[in-house]
Image 1 (cartoon, rainbow, N blue to C red):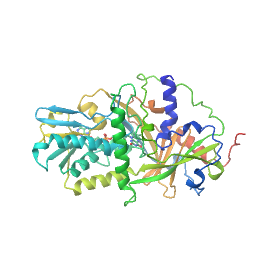
Image 2: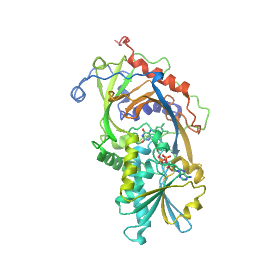
Image 3: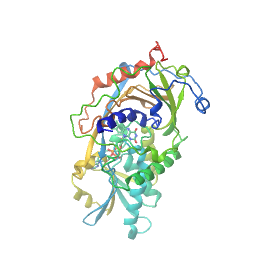
Image 4: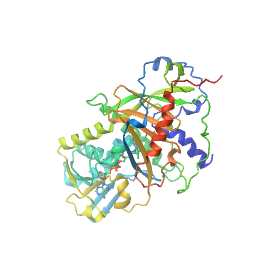
Length: 412
Ligand SMILES: Cc1cc2nc3c(=O)[nH]c(=O)nc-3n(C[C@H](O)[C@H](O)[C@H](O)COP(=O)(O)OP(=O)(O)OC[C@H]3O[C@@H](n4cnc5c(N)ncnc54)[C@H](O)[C@@H]3O)c2cc1C
């Protein structure tokens, strides 16, 4: 399989990855919509409130750069003078998903390095995004006092601009560039994260929840064939790692359902239960917990690593995300630009969908509409975080067709 073909396949998976539907893709184009086996009972037909999929309902357009490293997240230890820095950055499109597991690894290393400081060491965390907050909490859980230093804090970090789906292997690494033990490390991070995220289920404000996600396909192939090779003008494509098979059975899988049981004007449908993060609420709650357990947050911008060595804390966990590229002059971090058009929230919409390269996720703080057309290479090497309104409206128009009142003829 060529890289272009692989990445085009990922262009389909990119949307589904966010939906927890990966692994069931093969049948999606041809599924007749006939539900068999457990699907009929797992997902009984139910009324779905229509999403008002109109550019008039855009409330904001956010753009952010995923911190992609071909070798996967950086988790090694570096010494700057007397200061020991445990790195915890470079999680691509999986930072929220893998946060607890990655931060547990970083926290264990930091506690081991702080060994001689006694049972209650004070450890610094640089960064207040998904990785900084979970690192702080993992350290506190292990008995440390924590000071977070960050240029920006919740809700102004890049982490706040994420979709909010369980996507543990989205742009996490280049399969050809990782060390032999990385897949196993990834699995450990994914399993610990999936379990820890679930400790938030059912708590106030639903920071973590499971929602039905519909994977929809047109009756006939879209006019733009899914297999058209991508024209890439930027850096050479990478072979994005796919590790989902390692955790098969961990998250619910999707099942085919009769398209007639849905309100969608499409040819076939699958549905699965997807872990979703209500990021505004989750980040707020994480920050509150850090503070409630005696943590402090100081606003600080570091320009060079030696400024970190001047901190009073001599053990530091570095969770600067994309910011590490400049701060650590780490050119192995590649920006992967992603844009979300946010529609006004609709509390009555309790599901999401994927159709024709568009991911739609309903959250309390808005309805996420995100293009994944182009696959994981979409935005690769692009640092520009300027919103593109034209693209946002085109993406909304594509998703809107599934709510068309005229159902197209079904095949066969
Ligand atoms: C469009 C889009 C959608 C995404 N959707 C998902 C998703 O659904 N699920 C998922 O798991 N992941 C998703 N991601 C990926 C996820 O958002 C990132 O992996 C994650 O946010 C990275 O978190 P972080 O804490 O490492 O970095 P950040 O959130 O960028 O936090 C970095 C922190 O470090 C601080 N900092 C940086 N440099 C300095 C400095 N020099 N001095 C002081 N402080 C500094 C910042 O101020 C900030 O506090 C998505 C990403 C994008 C772009």
